[in-house]
Image (tube, rainbow, N blue to C red):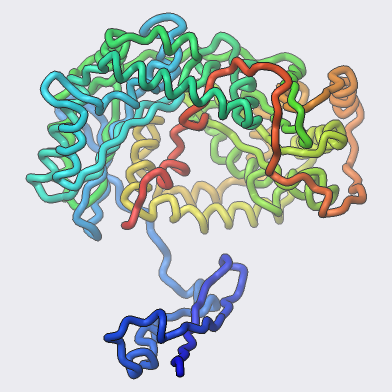
Length: 548
């Protein structure tokens, strides 16, 4: 007769949901190794005394931000360091002012240069083959990567803190930064892979919208073209272009250093000095030009046969260094990034069932970044959904800020912020962000206090200054679009703003996020990899397979 054992498993569905306990029946005869005896299976759980009720969460000690050491190397390179002795490892991030916005500074129209440099920088030097580079990192347990964004070129190295192993890994990183060869055969491989990505692009309306959106808003500005460039531009890239990019932008005076891990301050200073002294010094990149804002509505239509229409609404907003940054982050949380509590989600989904999900975001960058909102809806609900989204934005800008929602939003941001420095990699990404945008070293420790000080008046003033519902760019992927009707509706919203009235809907008629698309015409826009987001510290952490 088979023995059967019941084990209890406890899980949570978020802080607002109570614990639930489930029993699972295990067939001991088929699932338990032979050497396990019956007594060991029924022994009391040793960890029961460690379990906590959610009622006691508020009694747990506060999580404090890590102490950030801010110093300059002998070469005057800003370096930020956080000591973390929990694991025998060190994370290093070199953040260069060398994103895809710098591509055309090497040669006009050479879009995709920074991205290709990031993909090929570890593919060999005059002394080492690509295999030897990979083996060097692997043999000492290190991991190297490089990524290009619009603003940044980010080099990351994760290594063990053992001095010999760390020395070997850092030496190889410095060798790549100084001597990467960018062989023609490797360039051709990247070109071929990018061309293959074109086929996937034809079936991805979100990426199509993103490309068209940036081109429509930024026009001739360096931010306008995709990070990966175009089919025509990447075919022009030669080894000498990549070497010139490296020599001009991947230099000490154009970077900041972030170090996190099992080192003391003296050791971190020694490491930072070594890094900044062993690569070319060069010069800091010049400031990017400011883009020109639109003066009226700009409606862009991408024809697609689809059961759904996809909508992106955006405008130029502001830079990362704007004093209104924090007030706008709070405003965005209230408007469109706060889940079911956000205004857009309530108006479009909860009250009317016009979409499955809607969100908004600010993209804060060196030059003026974007505010945008986006969603998908049924074809027959397209105009209505845009009318509701636009009117919700107008009301949000013009009407007083809800004090209760503001307080709840601020509390949520403060509670969630410790997640942004919960691991070595996330701390290091935060340090890279602080260094790149020239933020103060106490940015992490003072965050909660600064959020708490934001008032409703601060938020109202910020959104009225930076959000213009009369100057929006709309990019719509749909089978048909009556532009004249849409523009008249937008103008009517501006002339006669009204309070929104909920409409009747059925939940099962709401559009889902799945769709099958068949293009009506050949898609000529380039593929977009990596995804078009700034090198935000809130997103970088998940790119690392962290276990710390």
